[in-house]
Image 1 (cartoon, helix red, strand yellow):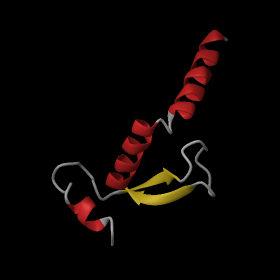
Image 2: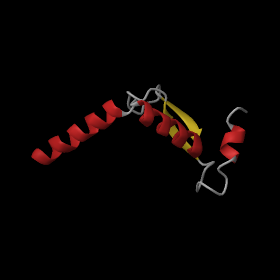
Image 3: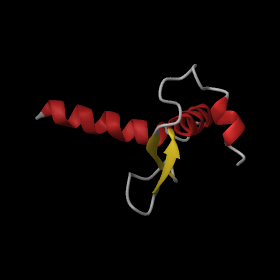
Image 4: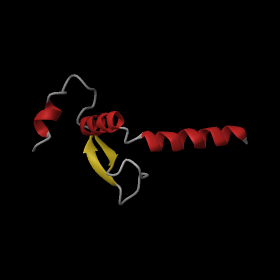
Length: 74
């Protein structure tokens, strides 16, 4: 109920704002059954934007960049 007014404010602004998506509970972890919940697209976007602003995804981004670099070196 707390999210509903926020979500509805994006109707017609964000495409598929109310579609379902998977959201990691802990930004440092990978997608897994224990670390994933179902959320609307606009909730996902709002939470991930906040996490990016707070630097919570920096470690995940660094690891992904290193994995991509390691794959190119082979």
